[in-house]
Length: 155
Image (cartoon, rainbow, N blue to C red; front, side, top):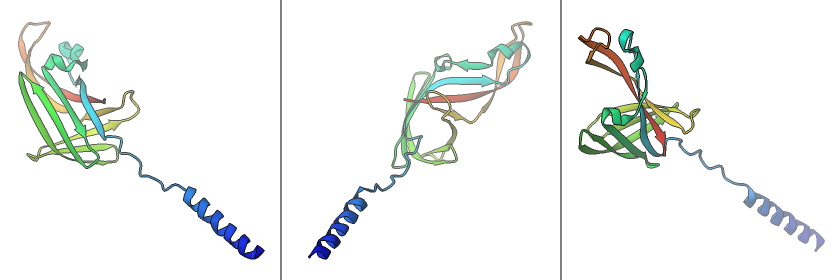
């Protein structure tokens, strides 16, 4: 009888210990959540235009954007520009801190996750631009090349 009780006790103990071990849940994907355009970073200006390099409020460009990355690998977003409102949606992939958003029209945008910033940021690839700007020194209009980068923060 003692043997049976001892064996039963061991079985129950093993069962209790086994039920206490937690299965390891997968790590949450850090890009899942809501993102909002926080700033537009300009770079590459030289000479008389060098003071234009830096972070700018999106309102200066009359451009707002926000999107939500969902755990089911889909996303939705809204752009507001020059009085127009455009909704978009599609699917996403995240590999090696790189987020790729591909909308239903086949357009693809790529972002790098910067989790060293507070709050966490998504940085777009640099977008080459050129524009005719008036030189502040000479007053003459001239073609100027520069880069834009969109910086989103997690909400």
